[in-house]
Structure formats: C-alpha cells, structure tokens
Image 1 (cartoon, rainbow, N blue to C red):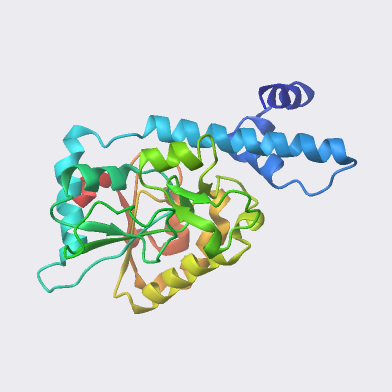
Image 2: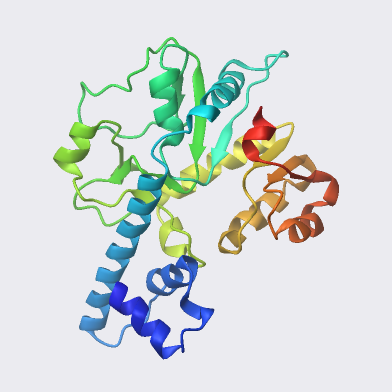
Length: 276
C-alpha cells in the first residue's frame, strides 16, 4: 500500500490529488476495470491493506472516552434510554464504527442500561451473552456505516443480514476473526460495493422508519462530508424536522451547511458542550 501511494504521488508531482485518505481509498475500493488477473489480485491486496489500516488507525486512536467527558456522556445516554421529563426517548444514529459508546456503557452504565442495535445480529455461541440484564432499559444505537464488532461469517463473500455476526468478546474475536476486517463502510466517494446486499438495506430501512416517526432530528459532530453525498440526499428529505446541526466552531464547512439547511439551524460549538 505504501509503495502504491508513493508511486501515485511521484507520478502526480507530489500534488494534492492523492494526498488524502478519501482519495486513495476511493481509487482502490472503487476500481472495477482490470486489464488482467494480476491487476485484479493486486487491487484485492490493496483493498485488504487499506481497510486494515483504517480499522487499526481509528480503533487505536479512539479506544476510550476521555475521563473529563464520561459524566457528560453518561447523562446523555441515560436521557436517551430512560426518556426526558415527558417520557420521550431518543434514538442515536451514528456513521462512526468505533466502539467508544459500547465500552463506556459496559464499563460505567452496565447496571443501568443495556445497548441494542435495533436488529438481532447473529452470535456464534448459545452461551455468549451481551453482558447486560435483560430487564434494564435499552440504549438504542443504530450504526449505519457498520461497526468494529461486526464481522462477516468465515467464507462469506456477501454482506447479507444472515452473514453478519456480533462479536463483543475478545475470546470469540481471537478464536474466529483474528486479523479479520470488521463490517464497515470506509470514508470513500464510492460506496456502492458496500451498500449492496441485504444487511445495509435493513439498517437504512430501520433508520427511515424511525426518522418518519421522529419529532425532531439533531446532528452532533457531523458536517456531511463530501464522501457522504448519499447521506446528504437522504437527510434533505427530512429537512423540516432538522432542529440543530452542531459543528466545530473552527470548521470551514459552516457556510456550506448554512446554505443547505439555513443558518438558524447551524450551531458552532463543541459537541460535548452541546450535550452537556
């Protein structure tokens, strides 16, 4: 992978054309024309390596929630799972694949709530449990771009709902999926290959049903990047329900978002400050 990137940058005169992870991943993951079997196999190797690189970089950099943010997130999760003063509960939808939320709930809120993904994912062992008492309220968490604890069954070449397994303990991960790539959609301009199959169709259909019923929609820390043009088109349908879009106060994307959604809906503060 490194040789491939260095080759492209050299041929491009070290310009910015191939300087971002989005451009490199789009080129590798979106390629569909191959001139011989060797070029196809070479691209398969590059796909495997870049997906491994993305997974290891994100999971390694975001392993735990910062100590000064734990209490704020705990209060937010309680409100989502238990409801506000009117009893209204919130569904959290994310495009992230990391396990920060899962780890925080397991380590700090396991006696107060359980985490649910809104669909019944496969498990390998009958004795494998989620680690939460069934009688606790559920923090509903819909991960539309996959998750680092979801894996395709060994030998599977598709991403249908029957092929995806939840692996939430380290022993099962090491036993069956050691060195495997989790089920997630990388940051690329071309996502068609990942959205095929029934699994992501089920996830997005669930999201659509909940958004149809929602009173209001708030985006926290999500600025509709250029790689997520399909997400933008999808959520523009619910434009009248969007209350707040919380983005970094230093972002350069504010004018774009104001033009799309209206300046009155764009809030430029830190995400944790908003949740607090």
